[in-house]
Image (cartoon, rainbow, N blue to C red; front, side, top):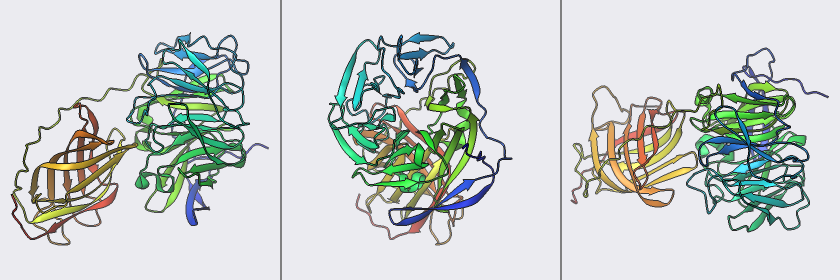
Length: 490
């Protein structure tokens, strides 16, 4: 029986989901008259039975697909170039069943994996194949999961969000979830029973993701369930009114591409259509081929679902910095020079104050950054702590270099009374555990409840490359400027 179409726009049904002993509300749309919010473009048609798709960055950004389902003959993989031409990737052939693929991307959590490497099932229970970035060599099998009776037609995902140490995460048709190191060492996380399909790890950002932060998300299509799985193997089923086929985190400034098996079509959408959704979870449903946005609303403690688009039958979807035909490559970020910290802290213009708090900022490119801090206008007073988290990345302040606390007459930080409202600083710290990163930041306190407070944060890695640049009013949180007694320990 075909399910009735659920369309975004009218949030009228509240479903209570019990997880970890806590009730969370899931706001679910159910009005079929509302318009969909993403316009899809058919960029290639007549594919030879495509299934899997992912971003492939070596040597230039392209899209890689698994084709020729179910036999894998005469070959299994194709690359799609910007002009739409398709070329065979690798001489591998004969991998049967639904060939889902995971390509390694450049990130701070490669954990021994190489960008451009491809991982997939082989059509034999428990087997994982590892394919070189240029497709010229392969290990088949690379790993055989011990005792695994299920196929890997579920999904694979290399943890680029640093939540599981950068391991390869694998789910199977027997309902098992595994993690595998780059050295090929597997460990079973949990056995759930239902056929699992669709997979991602989630950045450890509770403000952005609520109870899903730092966990694995895996779909159980037949049960209408999204499982969240933690590092100890504890799992919870979340029923959102969606039957998951594939699951992704929406990244900033990357185009969308999806395989429509029923329509034998590769669909695309420009990155700009997803700007307001960056960081949210995207779930593709097979039939009907609905594409859903899932957003954690921290204020209401609810997951909110929005239907974005529909095609005949989704199989696998991805985001990529590649462009194909009408979907042009997204712009590259503009580099910014890092500040040059002074060797000793510079006394602030106003010393009898401190600021603490935190929150989230989303800039025009769609990047959401969450921060928390306690900072003193006189750095010698201490402690001076600042943490920034975004898209699976982390910055930890180790040393302040310069500090200026000032009073902007156009900003009123009351209550409580404070001698300043603006904190500007530079410093050094650790980026994803590596020392030598630099930061420049400005925080303001514009009074309660915090929605007019403002933050600007720029972070450079040890090599001088910008890894984060965001600014804007707080989407959630609060900055608090406070007066304190002056001490001098220079």
